[in-house]
Length: 307
Image (tube, rainbow, N blue to C red; front, side, top):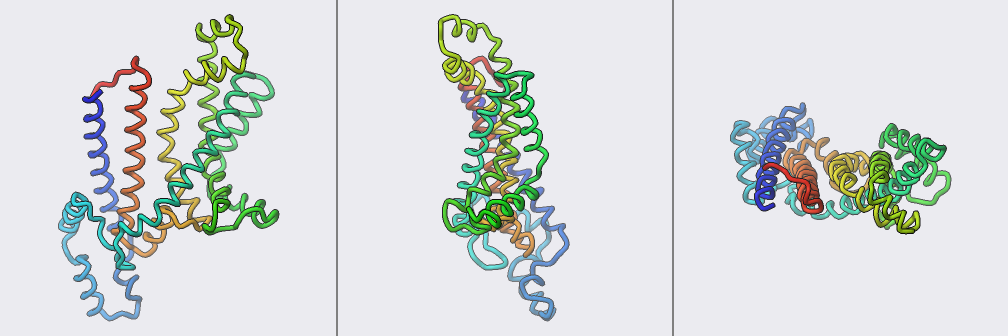
């Protein structure tokens, strides 16, 4: 187990280094000049040269890359080119909103997927099975940027139940969480159905029924518990999609999270902030997948990984 932990940790650092390198190259290849964006088109060439030198943007690309790596090793994320504010403080203000949105979206997905997948599995090839899987297919097909305005039109503009945008109180997260959790719920519902169908044919399920346990007890205490491992794996892998969807969702609903900060920083050509945001999302994704990998092998001793 310890060998597996260090192997996954080493792999995680390799992925993070690759992400840092790729993001650094991409944001420097994107058309646009951050100096011109900061000073405006009316700035003189002398002012632009002076600011570019002060920000270190006149150095060779390779030098800037190694400087970035050295700063990351020291835990220094740098300073925003646009606001001159330490990036660490900017992220500290935005992270709680993104974490709350992600957890709320995850809760919505689980609340929909578990009963939907269970009903479909218990009514295989019947009306409820076809209905649940049709909803699942619809949830996968509908993109966030279409579902979010639809929810705003219905529940905010017509019914007036929730705020249109912004982050004032807990009800500001309901529509974004529904937007974010629907697609994940559709994927998980299919996984729950497939896993339960496989588990329900096992011998220990027939034994539990033979002992006189109720159908509900068999499903909750035996079937769902043993079906949790594959669902846990899919859940960990889909968290990256959940974080990626948060970028679009936060932008549409004007939530002050990491996603909105990323989009704003791209528009301003604020290289250090963009890199820090993408790095944070990537580290979260890789970290959750690594944790899921280790948790899987711990929960099921039959599973062995080769480091």
